[in-house]
Image (tube, rainbow over all chains, first blue to last red; front, side, top):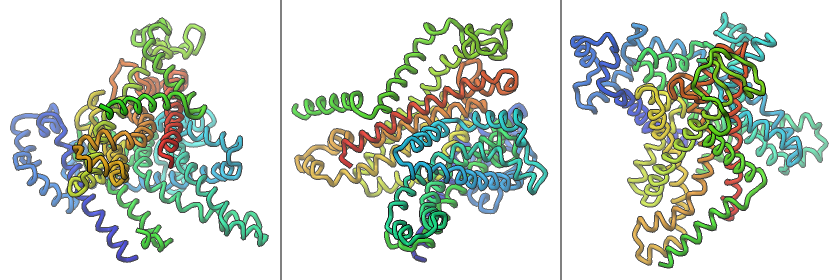
Length: 312
Length: 288
């Protein structure tokens, strides 16, 4: 098992290298001279020369990459021209709210998905099953920015149930403020969870140990919670980790719609200010999150079920 | 000679099968998609309104017989804008699927068929691109290239060809050990002939099934970028852009936001009906 986990860690290394190359190459996509693009209307020949020198644009490409990498490993991602501050400092302070939003989204998605997946699995092929499937297919088709605006209108403005914008004042207040954004993203994530949970519930409900448990006269609620649900939730961990990039996409949109100062809204905001170094770092952080979450999911899976190591 | 004849037979029967068989929801999906495409093409015959012309005498009118979906803050007919917007949004979906599907299929075939270092290199590239969240990488690329529809297509292509390459590679690896491929090789057929004539027809079904869900995703991503001002630019009617432009009038004219969003939902739903049906058909064809 330890060998498997070590091997899994080693697999991540080339991916991380590749990710850093892509992020480095991003600025190469800027049409024309990147230093002119960075400076915009402030560009004078002297300033351009200084920025070119600072960005190392006159070096060969591979050397530029090595420079980028060695600086990045020391946490130096350059200076934000808009914030006049270290890019790392500007970005990293916004990570907690992004992570909180993601965690809450996962929680709400599962809370929404469990009852509906149960109804679907128990009444398989019947009207409730079809109704659930159609409802969640529609939910999957709703663009996050649209459902966010609609929810803010209904829950925030019309019925005045939830605060619509901003991060609140810390603690419980912040959690309450995160409810609407995470509900918005959860509407896009829950359909994926429902689909997976439904099929794993069907499998578990039909398995021998559930039949045995029923025959032994276990209370239905005890059986459901301790046997059925616990064994059905594992594929949910997998499906959420596989779709983590999709979850991040939702987070970026929701942060922007609901004025949350996270990494996602920083990414969107930095496009208008042409803060390319910030765009690079935000992109890098999101890719790292995907890689880490998938790694963590695999390792957790392994610890929960050591048979997996032998199977591979 | 016979190979060519066989192929036309296979192709026709595949097309026939795609149109004539399948579940009810699959056929309904095809019918609905055809109707949406026709409505987009023949938009000028369906609505008398110009989707761009301003009419400051009739701003923010609620839905009525004159304006079925109401008017927006510039007096433009929302129904006309949704209808004309379908042209752009369906185009985003179609191009966003077709180009990556083409590139990814060829690359996936090569990787799966030849294996070895070719496969290793392509595999690493795929792993790396997949590590990025789809929307984030598309946004980052468009941020660098600059806003606009063409740059959106470039970004969608750069990010999503890998998904098709991964699918086709897996299928090719499984197929290349089948007897009929070994037989073709023993007959001395060239690699490209074996890849494109013998393996490709059997790998394309899963790529198409994925393509349908990718279509819905591309429409959503395109609308999202336009919503953020990175995609289609005003005054072109596009659903995401329409929602962005009408956002400040949510309280007085919710119809101007509900209608384009509902259009996105309908397209996603229709496409997913077709995708599910195709998946069933693909399973049937392969006997899996």
